[in-house]
Length: 98
Image (cartoon, rainbow, N blue to C red; front, side, top):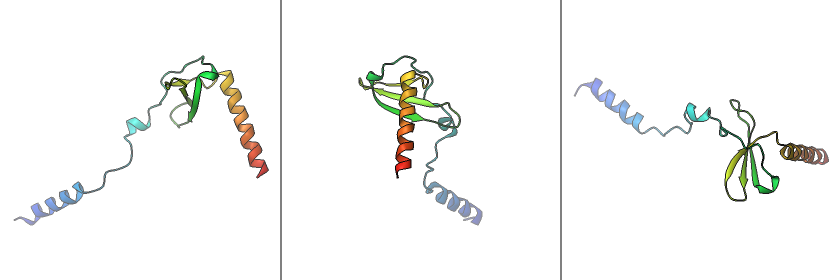
């Protein structure tokens, strides 16, 4: 058997057993989660909030509602702005007391 052909088979065999990469494709990394937002939502409907900030997307707020529906909400809603101010005050207060 030709040595070049044997070498090619060896390289292909090693390459096929390499562990898969954990990185996500660029097209998935660059997408923003929130393509549209809800502009009016009473605070009482919200069960859980998640905040996402990525370099390529604006600040995004994802709310899980009491009905288990997940929506993106406008980060400029008055009750959300007050919630964030209170959270920062608590964080600052806790940081100063330790």
